[in-house]
Image 1 (tube, rainbow, N blue to C red):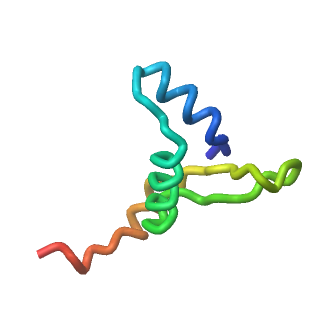
Image 2: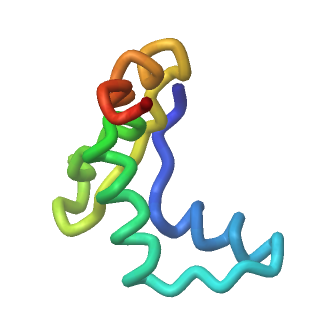
Length: 70
């Protein structure tokens, strides 16, 4: 899967008329990372920036915590 930046996410959200406040996207990607649905890396050219990569669905499903389902 292709890596993408926060700026690319912001642009895409704005194209769909969704406000992309930085604090909200930080929380969103942090939560996705904790669930094992996205990988986060530092940009090799600018360590202040992060690169995101979605986990393939077949792998992400294995990261689900199914113990909570009753």
